[in-house]
Image 1: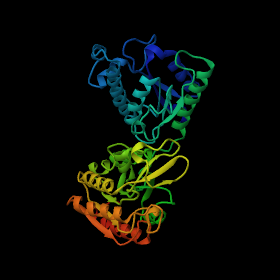
Image 2: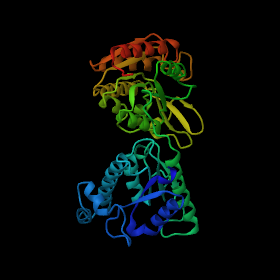
Image 3: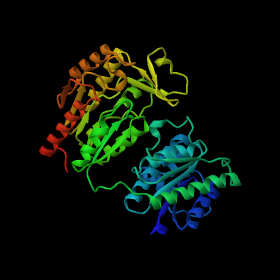
Image 4: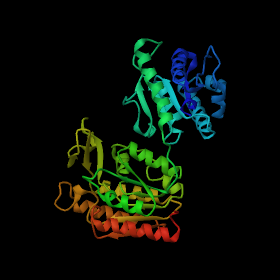
Length: 410
């Protein structure tokens, strides 16, 4: 029943008990249930909560006294963040909570990112923060499907302005818990990375072809957060196979673009998920189009995709670095890996005659892939462009071979 959804409400009850209690009141007023979690260190709430600060610290393998004795509020809150994350995940797995809402300033938001990151994609997770959407929050720490709302006027105490934000967030997380359809396992799933059809097009043909073979297909927009979601699900074993055909976030991480974190291109391999890999858009670094061009990317050929995003072209040596990095990441894989290398280009803007074509750079990248690819991976060089039908045909041929061999489970 919708009324039985339970929301974990977490925060520092020693300093924000009124605000946290208000959140709980709104959730209960809408027919939901609440589990309160105290992540305070120094003080105690006036009314006992469901999960005490001592339980939180213990879940991190520590204690409140250790946190206090550290004399460092940053270290203390990291202890609490680790414990809160561990407890939240355990509670979710036991079916005790259906969503989470965390409230805080910079300290509470730092903890909230740890807690929410521990929960799988599809679990409603909301953060009410005085620094929501702030550049203080590094993209690689933001959970893939978290929702945030600015805690306007709420640094200290309740008022009409902050009640508006708190009540919205309380209603949103409860509504999400009631409405969400968690990812199911009715059909095996293929995870795929790409960009929009103006630059990469293979998913247009691959998605229906894979669906006809009995698989669901999830295509992730590889602009930082999409890659984080892809990696999170790959590491959880959600995918029967991955088609990581847009690993540009590796280039971004190396050269100051929109990073998905250092772990990009590692989780599927470590989880023994078979991987098909191609270097879609490997030659580009994406940066925020409305900001000043980063110093290291100035003076390069670039493509302004829209007012939000611009892509700058890598030089020859940078492309070699990307190739070596990709190969190093694939060397850790515990399941079969096939790398498709389209010899005529890896995005629509780098075709011969197009605005970002660089034949020397492409040749250098391909040469480095050949040299550095681990012996555990299979290289398939294709005399075509990544957006040609021949690329799709080669991918489906490999997919069908892996199906017949049992590498990919139906």
